[in-house]
Amino acid sequence: MARVTRLDRVEQTTRGRFTGPPLTPRTAVIWSVLADELDRRAGAELTVLDVGGGTGGFAVPLAQAGHRVTVVDASPDALAALTRRAAEAGVAARVRAVQGDGDALAGLVEPASADLVLCHSVLEVVDDPTPVVTALAAALRPGGAASVLVAGRAAAVLARAMTGHLDVAAALAAAPDGSAGPRDTLRRRFDADGAAALLRAAGLTVEEIHGVRVLADLLPAAVADGQPGSLVELERALAARSPYRDLAAQLHLFARRPA
Ligand SMILES: C[S@@+](CC[C@H](N)C(=O)[O-])C[C@H]1O[C@@H](n2cnc3c(N)ncnc32)[C@H](O)[C@@H]1O
Image (cartoon, rainbow, N blue to C red; front, side, top):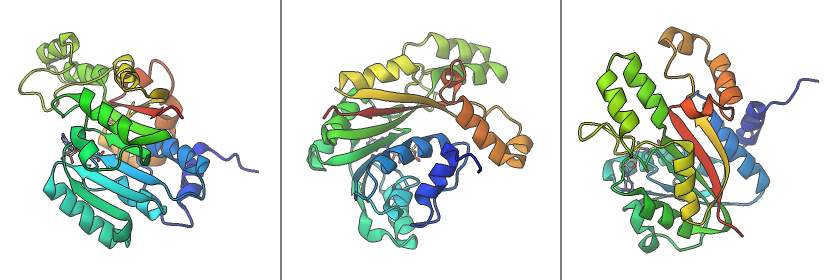
């Protein structure tokens, strides 16, 4: 009998109820962690909050899986695209779009109401990540889980160095916030310890940390495009292992509000 891999389990979780999100090197590791939590709560209609959820790349598949998703985002354009995407997927009734700021969640959603909070690729662009993490922790019900994706600092240093921008690499490596300065597109980048400390300071228990895009950004497009299944498997194999995890372009933290 064929061995059932975690990747298979992601497909099985999504199969039958909807076609499932495409398992790309950018998302497969995150979906497999989320699939474990969805499996754990199988049968329950979860209340999901996606802070800075943008156009709904995670929100819509979660709604298709039968959950109720509120996306809070600062951008009206992103929310308009989310609304269109949810309608096209036939889940408009299960997706709520709310324009607002991540650190003002208390006035936008019921405190302690969410089973699952997503905050992907947001903490590196907001003015201050601490109030956003505090707000998302407060939005979680006791026992609820947070999925937090942040930009990794080490990968950015290596990427700048490998393209010959040694001065930028040095600035990134030295800067306490992992930003190369005012012209940098991101305000900060994280290492695993720093990101975990941020979540712990908000009262969350960090259960898992994975690297996302350990290799994906380093490979020639012909390799990445030519062997997508192999790349997904390799990303998944390396995601939790040191030193690969810490060199990933992004770090995914899965945390829980104590029950
Ligand atoms: C890089 S996109 C990530 C979108 C989505 N989470 C994903 O992973 O595909 C960042 C999103 O955060 C939103 N955003 C930025 N600052 C925010 C803030 N202070 N409060 C709420 N949303 C914010 C942006 O409008 C954008 O949609």
